[in-house]
Length: 121
Image (cartoon, rainbow, N blue to C red; front, side, top):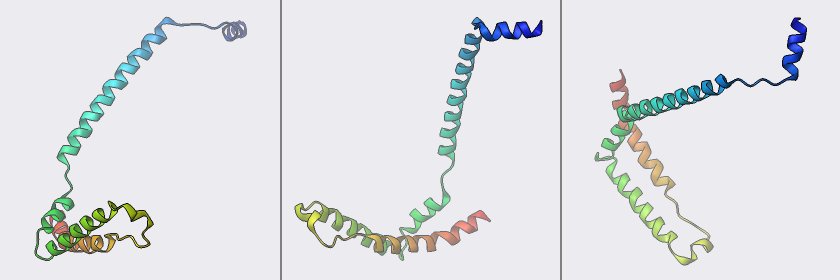
């Protein structure tokens, strides 16, 4: 008897009206969960601010790093101005500010790292 029942069920499709309602309920609950997760993510972003970034911004105003920051900004301005020229694409040498960037970040990291580890202790 069980065999005939299984055979009949496999041959004839069966539609259940209740399944659609369950799917709608599941979709609604999934949407609610996604909204809650987004709200939690927004709260985390507002609360969590990287201490290293704040220390580095403070260090950029120190006497040792301020000249390097100035040189970097001058270089960026010079390169940007040069890029606006018409024959920029044909130039053999195109200046970049990589050296100034690394000198600046080396100074900022040397200044901020000891303070950061002191705060983390």
